[in-house]
Length: 305
Image (cartoon, rainbow, N blue to C red; front, side, top):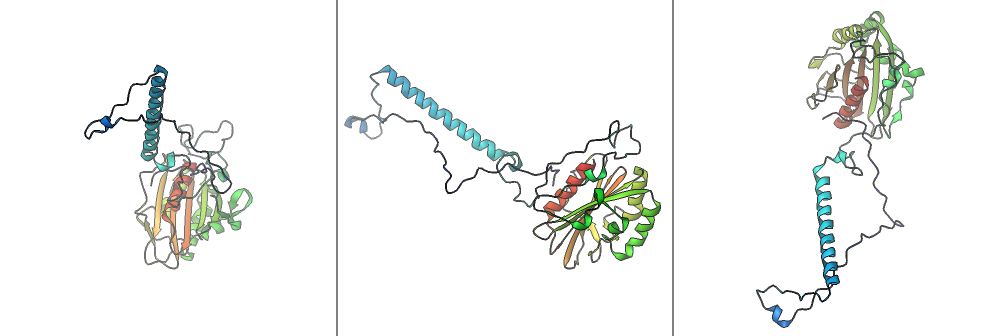
C-alpha cells in the first residue's frame, strides 16, 4: 500500500424522484436524400444529388464537423477516466477498498523561530509543535473514546501501560520513569463495524532518549515478545505492509498478531520520529480490517515526519 493522504472525495450529483436531469442537446442532421430506383442497384454506393443551394451545402458541412468534434471529445473523456486512478477522478468513490474518511491533514504551526524537527538547526530532533496537534484526527463515523479525552489529550503513564499485557508493564514503567519521558498524548475511537483504535505519542527530551526507549523496550525485530493486551502468543512483522511507503527521517515497524489468535484480533505499529515514539493499536473481534489499519499508520507517520 502506498502513502495516502486524507481520503475525501467530492460527492456525486444527487439524482432521484423530483430531480430533473436535462437531456443532452443533439445536433439535428438533415433528412436523408431520396434515392432513385437506379441508385438502389446492389453493389453500388448511392450518391445523393448535389444541393441546389450552396447555403444548404455549408450547413451540412457544419453539422458534420460538429458531430465529429462531439464524438472525438466523448472518446477522449472516456479514455481519460478509464486511464486514471480512481482516486484522481472527482465523483468516483475511493472508499470501496475499506479506507476511512479522515479530515484533511494539516501540519500545525510552529512557535515563532522554532525549527522543524529534522533540520540541521535542530540536532535533538525536537517536535516544537503542540503534540496534541500531531495526533491523527478521528475519521468520519468514528466515535471518540471518552477515556482518552484528557486535558490537551494528555494521559498518565498508567493509561499507556494498559495497552500491554500485565507481564510487560513493570519494565516499561521503570524505563519511562527514569528515561527522560516528558509526556504522553493519546486519542482513540471506535468505528461502526466494532474496530477500536488507540494512538499514543510519547515525547522524550531528545531523539537519543526516544531511540533508547524503543530499542531497549519495544525492539523492532521480526517478532516482538512484548505483547499488546489481547494478543495470545506474540506479534510478527506484517508481511502485507508496503515498506516502500516511507517518510524521511522516520521509521515504521508494523505488526500483526500471529496465530493462534483469541476472540480479539490485534494489529499494532510503532513510529519513531525524532524525540517522539508513536504506538498505534487497532483491535476488533474477529478480524481487524487490513486497509484502514495501514492507512492509519501511514497518516500518523506523515504527521510526525
